[in-house]
Amino acid sequence: MIAQRPAAVFIGSEVYRGSSYGAVHPLRVPRVSTVMDLGRALGWLPAHQYRISPRAKPAALTVWHLPAYIAALQAAEAGAEVGAEIRARHHIGTAANPIFPQIFSRPATGAGGVMLAADLLAAHSGPLAVHVPGGGTHHGLPDRANGFCYLNDPVLAMLAFRRLGLQRIAYVDIDAHHCDGVQHGFAGDPEALLISTHEENRWPFTGALSDDGGGNAFNLPLPRGMNDSEMRVVLDQLIVPRVAAFAPDVIILQCGADALDEDPLSRLSLSNNAHMAVLAALRPLCPRFLLLGGGGYNPWSVGRCWTALWAVLAGHDIPDHLPDAAQDVLRALSWNGGGRPQPAEAMLTTLRDAPREGPIRAEIRDRLAVLARR
Image 1 (cartoon, rainbow, N blue to C red):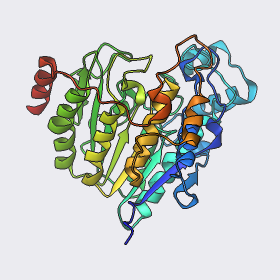
Image 2 (cartoon, one colour; image 1 turned 30 degrees about the vertical axis):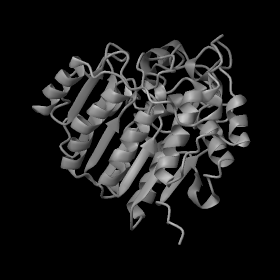
Image 3 (cartoon, rainbow, N blue to C red; image 1 turned 90 degrees about the horizontal axis):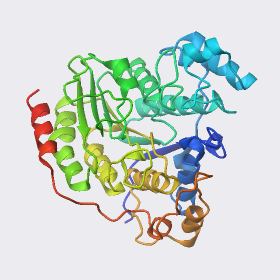
Image 4 (cartoon, rainbow, N blue to C red; image 1 turned 120 degrees about the vertical axis):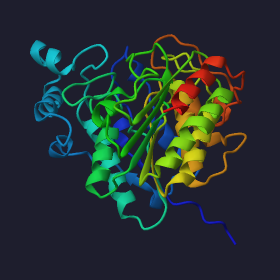
């Protein structure tokens, strides 16, 4: 008898293929398209598990974002420029949040993906997990772009769950950067649990250990060099017990790959085993599960990580050595400029990183102890 694989759906889109924030921006590299290509090369994306992400309509985005801001994004895509007043008011056309050909359609596709995920999860009668690697833009604010994020699809997903009758939402974020936009949207909401692990003294410089978001947020700043052993302690002593005690109707996990050792925009040192461990520990805690992407600016590490996470969700065994078709996907990647070195051979031939274990530092234990007293 063949074991039945867990119910899982992958939501992707071709809008991400070739879409770039510009030649000098960290998001010039491919990410979601790499996950799609690796998944297909490995035989992990059969038609019955793949959905094409719809593009959210402007009216659907104004449940949280201001209509004037949505109109400004649409105008920027149509006209390829904005005036000084719009730039100052909405923070589009800046170095961090540049104008690019898909400035509205790409984030609106991510938002449409999480809204479709909410519909699927609310309607499904049994356990279901949905992976939307194009989601996870957790910095977006109601009236402006922020930190490479033009919309805030995690907030839009949470609001969609609420409209569909799923009230208690656990949001866990292991991106290297604090989820300031999500906390802005749900601070103080007793039916939303917010847990964020993020690098200390790293943009956006929010999410201090003392910041409880009005009582429902647990923020854990991480020291440079955070290793897999330390993340396991965080998982066992903070993330799992808080989520289990909360008894959510749905869990959202934002799995930014910028917390990995190879990422150029953080100084954390996790392997993708840590991300897989967080996912594997949280998945049994709730029948409904939404997995999002997020940060990640090394094209090899982010593509490998999010593909490995899909393997965990969909019940696939990760091979020790990738088949030629999958290796070809990884060998075809590049930094698309910038002069950074090519990756180690293992990043072209494997999906799972070597573990990055290490000592558990006193500051980790001390910070966990502070949060345990809440």
